[in-house]
Image: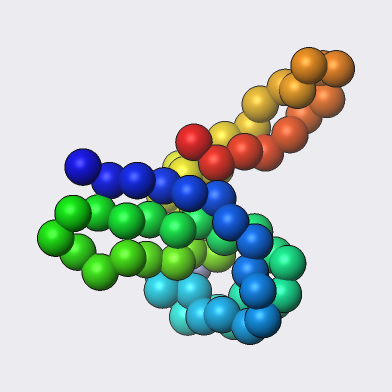
Amino acid sequence: MSRLTGLLVTGDMVCDGCGVTMKHLERYAFICEDGRAPERLCESCSWERELLKKKKDDKGRDIETFL
Ligand SMILES: [Zn+2]
Protein backbone atom coordinates (compact mmCIF):
# COMPACT_ATOMS: atom_id res chain seq x y z
CA MET A 1 0.00 0.00 0.00
CA SER A 2 1.29 3.47 -0.78
CA ARG A 3 0.21 6.84 0.43
CA LEU A 4 0.77 10.12 -1.36
CA THR A 5 0.55 13.47 0.33
CA GLY A 6 0.99 16.89 -1.26
CA LEU A 7 2.95 19.11 1.08
CA LEU A 8 4.77 22.43 1.14
CA VAL A 9 8.52 22.60 1.57
CA THR A 10 9.70 24.07 4.84
CA GLY A 11 13.26 25.31 4.55
CA ASP A 12 15.31 23.79 1.75
CA MET A 13 14.83 20.15 0.83
CA VAL A 14 16.38 17.89 -1.78
CA CYS A 15 14.23 15.94 -4.24
CA ASP A 16 14.74 12.19 -3.95
CA GLY A 17 14.03 11.80 -7.66
CA CYS A 18 16.33 14.26 -9.45
CA GLY A 19 18.34 15.74 -6.59
CA VAL A 20 17.21 19.32 -7.19
CA THR A 21 16.96 21.60 -4.18
CA MET A 22 13.36 22.53 -3.47
CA LYS A 23 12.77 25.96 -2.04
CA HIS A 24 10.71 27.06 0.91
CA LEU A 25 6.95 26.84 0.23
CA GLU A 26 7.25 24.94 -3.07
CA ARG A 27 4.93 22.00 -3.37
CA TYR A 28 6.28 18.51 -3.17
CA ALA A 29 4.92 14.99 -3.07
CA PHE A 30 5.57 12.85 -0.06
CA ILE A 31 5.23 9.17 -0.90
CA CYS A 32 5.16 6.54 1.76
CA GLU A 33 5.21 2.92 0.60
CA ASP A 34 5.19 -0.05 2.92
CA GLY A 35 8.64 -1.57 3.21
CA ARG A 36 10.40 1.32 1.45
CA ALA A 37 12.00 4.53 2.58
CA PRO A 38 9.69 7.54 2.12
CA GLU A 39 10.37 9.68 -0.95
CA ARG A 40 10.06 13.42 -1.43
CA LEU A 41 9.57 14.45 -5.03
CA CYS A 42 9.66 17.90 -6.62
CA GLU A 43 6.92 19.10 -8.95
CA SER A 44 8.63 18.02 -12.18
CA CYS A 45 9.26 14.52 -10.83
CA SER A 46 5.65 14.45 -9.69
CA TRP A 47 4.52 15.25 -13.24
CA GLU A 48 6.80 12.57 -14.63
CA ARG A 49 5.33 9.97 -12.34
CA GLU A 50 1.83 11.29 -12.98
CA LEU A 51 1.30 12.15 -9.34
CA LEU A 52 0.02 15.60 -10.28
CA LYS A 53 -3.15 16.00 -12.29
CA LYS A 54 -4.83 18.95 -13.93
CA LYS A 55 -8.36 19.44 -12.73
CA LYS A 56 -11.07 22.08 -12.85
CA ASP A 57 -12.04 23.73 -9.64
CA ASP A 58 -15.66 24.60 -8.86
CA LYS A 59 -15.35 27.88 -10.79
CA GLY A 60 -14.02 26.14 -13.92
CA ARG A 61 -10.42 27.29 -13.45
CA ASP A 62 -7.56 24.92 -14.18
CA ILE A 63 -5.82 23.77 -11.06
CA GLU A 64 -3.07 21.25 -10.50
CA THR A 65 -3.55 18.81 -7.76
CA PHE A 66 -1.87 15.78 -6.29
CA LEU A 67 -3.83 12.55 -6.60
ZN1 LIG B 1 12.77 16.02 -8.74
